[in-house]
Image (tube, rainbow, N blue to C red; front, side):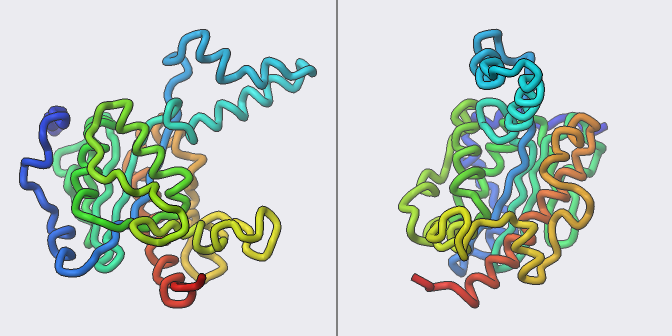
Length: 270
């Protein structure tokens, strides 16, 4: 087994001078970073009695006792969506222009050579913990002024901001939740494909998930390999870390292709 890397990520990573080749190669043009995260619920035992009562209060207050367990389980499944009840276990990143990138993923143990292993133009890098993962992510992000996401304004960006704050990891890009009605510095494709929610929930520009948009535009769905975001908790419990990383990368690859279609066919629509 390979010795773990130092967890001294709280020290000044920015001063290390590290600059990935896939980032450096793109600095001659205005490059965009496309990224996606995978999250996993924290153990319920981590929350004290008062916190658990607060989290499950809605279920406990249901008038019909037989309905309470079902609602309790539904709330538990939602833990993955909240940065105070879940952790980031993977971040996949691609340069929108070059399609080169990196996938950071948490792994309890990994064999020698897996960290930094190459898969074509993408590097897979195992991290000892969430703090190291976030620190490496922000180290890459500081080289980009613009990002592309799918629902990143509503999920990915606030999630990494808050998890970084909780772990005291320095955030190198603080402008990603700026003015909503523009595509710089953050082009959120869910906003663009719904024209900022112009139709509401049921109109012509209603919101669909990434899987649906991909199939509609002829892009291979990230879920085509039989894995979805709903499987992350189980995959993590089974220590199938690389499968999480590969799924997350498929999400980003699909987002890159969807972005290029949007930019060519709908970019500039007001």
